[in-house]
Image (cartoon, rainbow, N blue to C red; front, top):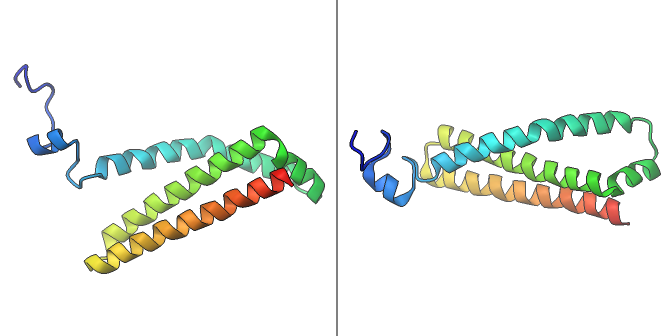
Length: 132
């Protein structure tokens, strides 16, 4: 290893210049999955505890819970992380198991569109309950 190249790397010189992994954005995709999974651990724990604390509550109590700023923010963070993690995971499944290029691309676009739509509906629902 020479002093000018730094630590050993499995990346090609062109990949180092472009900042891309072997699959272009594979490293970024891998890291985002790990970050969202780490974010989901405390968020899901909070959600399960919160949901259990609301068992038997009426609509007014649940609405008051969701309207609390901390809870509304945590719900929105959970929605964002959950749907992003789901889209990334399903994209990996599509990339691994769908061999036809056009079908794979269409499936990935459909997955991403569905996740964005469902996340928007969920976020809108939280905001509507919190602010009405």
